[in-house]
Image (tube, rainbow, N blue to C red; front, side, top):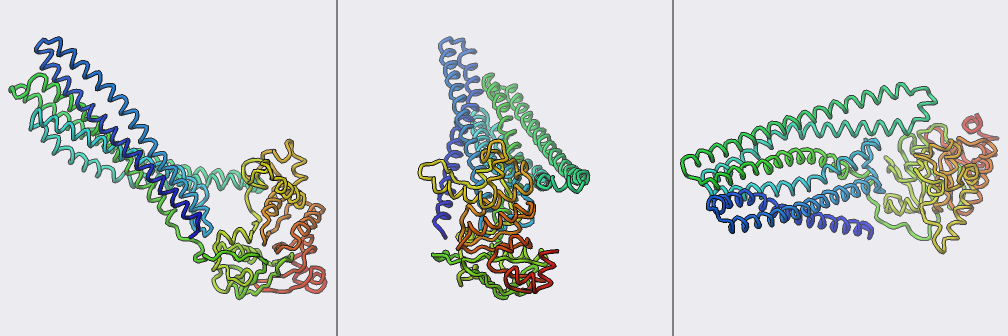
Length: 571
């Protein structure tokens, strides 16, 4: 376990403690507010009996002053309590968002399996928000319990009968409210599932918009999203109906309960068991109880939705890693030699490969499945079904994935650009700080090698120009050059690139090939491609044919002697 992981846990622990403090403070202030709210009708009853009925002006002014002080206390306790509760809810949602993002970005992977990116975004936003809101709901529930308890005690002091009705009736109402929230919980979970799926489909379609336009498949994509959206809408409406039924039935039960208290209080007043002031206090307390009892209904609904969202959040956080094991640090200095022995995975059929340290190696393939499987193995996104992959003689399964990713960078063909400037996509660091001249020079060299500097020259604001979400304002070839510049800029000891020039013209491709060779001189570089221009500048070429090593040699020799290679590369 690394220091960064311990630090993350410390941050999480501190955050949880902060949430508990906020909720505890909000609960205490809320209880003060509820105590004051319950005492208001009691004070009014006292004013009626001791000042109004007795026509005592002095006592009337005294009790009115007490009421004024009570309302000031009510105002401040509610404001401060609600602020503390909202803070606890927002901190909880924020902590969950960080935990979800941390799990998704974990080097061991696994959280994204079987989920579209939009679904994960929905879990990290809407579901995290709903779970965070449980803090506010719990605090409000404590307020409501305090209000009911104070009212029950006050009613017991006024009339034992009224107090017992409240004490015995409230648990029954809470139990009925819990039962009524069950359908809402089920339908809320279904609603969030369908909403997350709709978000995922929408994000997927937007990401592939340019391809869809090229295929003329926009209408089919629209119909697909329309069907998904309708299913999501239906689930949302079912959830809304369940919530309205739950709220309506609980309010009806609450109204009947309050009417019972008022009816019994009225009969007691008629037979002389209560004074006029006590009757006013009893009716006022009964009306006050509407607030806490309605709060219970709201809390039940929030908890039902929170439980459904918590299950979805827990599913992401508890997702098993795609790879297991590996705690050893990468040994320094890194030579960069890679060796595969008997590797079977996807399109790879027990291959043995030796990728020399410090050399530029080209790998041509006759089928894409072999290339994709090889990239997953080298980046340790997936462990082989059998066999081993080694870095400088050490199996990748023994190395810490985070350190391994910093050492072996696999630049996938379909990597994404981020919304922001071209410069921010090439390097994430701040290069305007003092002493950053060396970093700035490295960035310029990387962009020149990938011919991304030509892209910058064609943009209105140079490297400060925004590229749009996913780099949509750039052409395919421009995006590829920026992606290659980013991969080169990282400067990893081992770099694996996959088809980095499929969308550029042949002249630019040849210049990029020379720039790549020069920039990576003396460092291990592997180019998985069938591009003759790139393969021509490599030190050594390996042909993977049907998942096995079909031929090895220089590009020129293989073109001259191997028909399968010629077909794969020159056809």
